[in-house]
Image: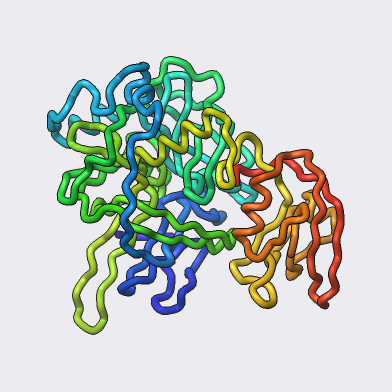
Length: 401
């Protein structure tokens, strides 16, 4: 798998180049196939994440309540759909799914970035990875089925499980994806991944492969935001998923979505033996993704699910912790944001928000998930000279996560 946007340096445990995630077991490196921290050239690029560890786990996911209503956009449609067990050619699978795929372009503070989404309802509910829209001030979505571009709002997201639901403004009559049952997926099954590889838009890209593992666990760390998440129960395949494919569908031979593409490794060669390690790709089981999507659609917030607009403090966080691994180290602030207005700057360490202790970048993200724009919260931080300061700030309206 090529990666023209930079690879992590083997053995360094850190990415080389702009933002990313790494995957360490067996010397293999991986990225989330999604738009990353874009550079001036090219103007639009797929983000990357690196996986920071992988291990097998045994977690079974059943079909979420109400999944059938999204199978073909018609209440009462069965999970397996009208095709049942009928096997289609790759060309027929692609022809079936392409109209239900969207290209997503997120506007970030330093450029644009691209990913993929799956149409759930004819009125414009779209499922994608949270990291596809992470940090976006605006989101444009082009429906492959009708060629139209819509502005999208974030209905809600679960950052810790990398799932988000978008609503396309003014959309109607969209072709919806047929959802399968990921609990019936087996090792060795043929799969097809469709997406926006390279962030180029247009006709979706296609990657074929087989399921090589089930119920896997991966942990990813974002070098840009300093946050990480552990995803459990994911499907592993050898499909050659590329940056930009994140949020796109992983399909079975009946043309039904059985997973949402999330991460992929880059091919590595063992310097000692000369043997090449196989490419590995990972997808969130569709039953798990849709169960979360239904919770979001129902407006049911939780410790991990955020509904509506995101509260914006206006900081970039380092992956390094504070002294004694306590606090979120600030790498920089957004001009005009709440943090900058309070006097927080690069090198400071935020230790609490709204009375909740913050011990890491993840902790800061999770604390803000419970708040909304307009909330007034007390922020406490430690300056570079060790002095403790605090201020009441009004959270703004900002990115999706």
